[in-house]
Amino acid sequence: MVSRLSESQNEEAAEFEPLPTYLELAMAAATADDRPKKRAKKGFFLWRLSPIEQAIAFAIAGLALYGLALIGDGFLLKAKAELSQVLLKRAFAAELRGEGTKPWPWADFTTEAKVRAPRLGKEAIVLAGASGEALAFGPAWLANTPQPGEEGTSVIAAHRDTHFRWLQYIRPGDAIEVTRRDGKVLTFKAGEGRIAPWDASGIDSASDGRHLVLTTCWPFNATERGPLRYIVEAELVDSQATGSVQPVNTKPLLQAE
Image 1 (cartoon, rainbow, N blue to C red):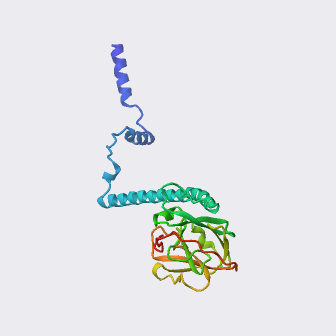
Image 2: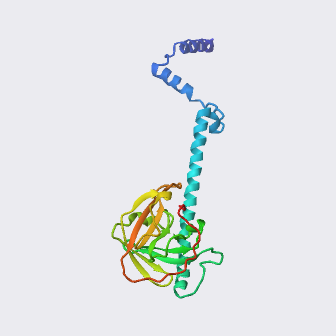
Image 3: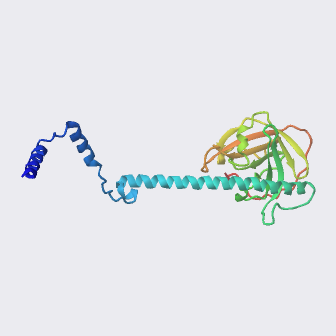
């Protein structure tokens, strides 16, 4: 009897326990959303884009790949230009000793001269009998112009991003030295650089006097071939007469980049 009364009193007391406070209710509601939820399956991110967004993404990726290809090609061209000049200098030294030799057995050209800009500390071996592709190895003396130092205007052309990149820094009055394969060293005085279309350059190979023209493509920072050329004309300043060297170049290169 006593135990039943005690149980009854406990039940009545439980019915009158303190109600939860507002803070406890708020905390319970806040933690109700903390249970882990299933993550939605994700596919390849491109398939979650709209067709227009996908087209833009593909275009950006294509441009990036094209840029990387251009960078790689540029590095290859410059490396070939630098390494080939080492072999060309050896071949030219042999020419000065009277030894007819090619820089490498399969070369379709020979070394003709060395052009040097003393103020800039730049120089390059000039090729003779060079095709347009051979301009990757060095500047080339044009077939339809006189030898440097002969009566008329001699023309030497080279690429703007390798061997004649320094041409843009030549100032009027700068000395340009040309060492021919017969050993003669000629000094020319540079004039003002100018820009002209390749087919209207105004260069006269039969002009009076002894002149030198160095030319390359313009503008210097462009990546595509264009119709414009940067031209630096120079005049022979020493009075020593020079002997003729039989030309072997037979391919004009005025359109070469």
